[in-house]
Image (cartoon, rainbow over all chains, first blue to last red; front, side, top):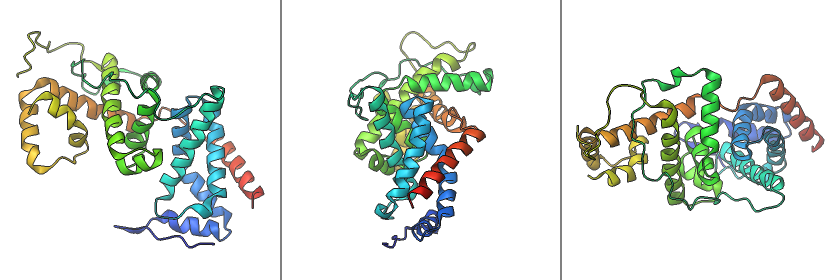
Length: 216
Length: 78
């Protein structure tokens, strides 16, 4: 078996490197630890892409199994987590394709829109607006809102802002250029902001001027 | 700085990766423009809300079931 190149970050090798080495040496309990560490993230990403719970369950199983089978191909020049996310994204897209009876599904779908690239609704939000809703209502609002984003924007937002990948890691994971990730991220953030404003706007207080002058 | 220039830099401002020399210009623009200040604050809040709320929960029983299924399949593949 090949030896994993150590990722020497600021704090030394990433702890996953040791776990991957153990798995490669035949210690399956180390893989158990990796699954437990990242299963929630993989499930969440799969849900965001497939928007279907059963598909997300299947993707989660298939992604971890594929990662296990391909562990020898993992070179260690990227983090295990980003490598795993890449597998999960690909599995999710394949699952989506199956559901759409073979129609090609890619992360470039529906991104040619200019919708939401210029902020229109400029109403301020209530302070701590999420407190005006129950946890269940809020989760429902957040789900509906993000599901309305074009597929290629949603996946960038989820990886970069929800899962905490860097711009470069997001680009590598999705096979996009860094400028493409940046462009999609800005539009995803602006569109989500715009849509959430419908729920979170301040109900009373300052009324914006209508003469087009934004001066304070 | 115009509003368009501000929006183009919005991600860098939120991610705190903006060059030091433009920072003063950005702060001045936000001080002068209500709309851009609102867009900045609400976009930042949007990200914070999505980060801090779990919208696709993995219940413990489902998690254990999936986990067991994964490990059984992995062991078979050994």
